[in-house]
Amino acid sequence: MRIGELARRSGVSERSLRYYEQQGLLRAERTPGGHREYGEWAVDRVVHVQELLAAGLNSAKIARLLPCMRDGDGGPSEIATQRLVEELVGERDRIDRMIGDLVRSRDVLDEVIDAASGPPGRGPRGGPA
Amino acid sequence: MRIGELARRSGVSERSLRYYEQQGLLRAERTPGGHREYGEWAVDRVVHVQELLAAGLNSAKIARLLPCMRDGDGGPSEIATQRLVEELVGERDRIDRMIGDLVRSRDVLDEVIDAASGPPGRGPRGGPA
DNA sequence: CTTGAATCTGACATGGATGTCAGCTTCTAC
DNA sequence: GTAGAAGCTGACATCCATGTCAGATTCAAG
Image (tube, rainbow over the protein chains, first blue to last red):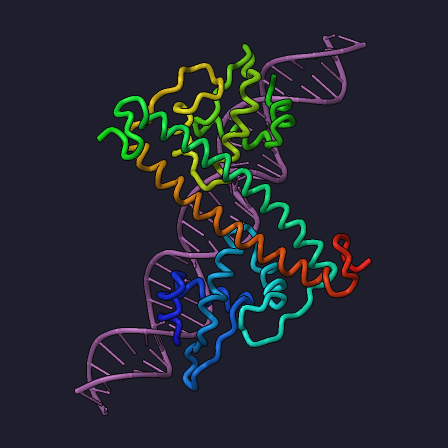
């Protein structure tokens, strides 16, 4: 498929897809005319990249991480370097803390939402209709 | 307490604390000379703000949310506007999705970490010593 | 061939919390 | 009073994925 379809299917802008390629996060074949051509595996790959970026890893780290996770990009999954593993453990712990923060934030929001929805109508859902 | 102590105790830079005040996220008394003076409640408040920022809410939204959550800032907790509640529900759902993404990313990292730590030593922890 | 949609490259802009620096004032302890 | 630590304001810089635009090229269909 070409970049437009991949963008549509993965929910990521064409701009970002080109950026990912530039950062070594996404390989693309080229047509004789120079247009990018992606295989099916690209969709999952893009989603993974998107999630990792959202998790706070920068593209450089993701670029080193990707070859170690098999998501059908063709190459056999490599084994992470000792050095990389250490960094990844750090990232994982950071993500764990982030999840904890997010859960707390979500609970705070729920509390405020419930406080506003509870008193008036007392309805279990839907708020003051 | 003054800004230096608050920064130390909350783990947030003085720069950010002044920024929070500018954005209406944190009130501060002033000494006759103009130095900021915080009460004990400020520590929790700053931590909350930090978490909400990490959750992706911008300062404007947090500023509207704060008076609805009682964290001992003195003022009685207000009731969220219908309009605000709608936005908060959107934010909560976004946070929920984000948590899902983070969990997936963490699992990916765990997989890579285990793959690198498992084969060589087979030790349950510590990796290839 | 022609035409319009899709793609290409390269450059500049953006957002938004935070870092950092400069120059000045206030506070604290002696 | 005096010295040094701490605080104040204001301005500019940074990060980095993404948006956006311009001008040129390629692709697909008639």
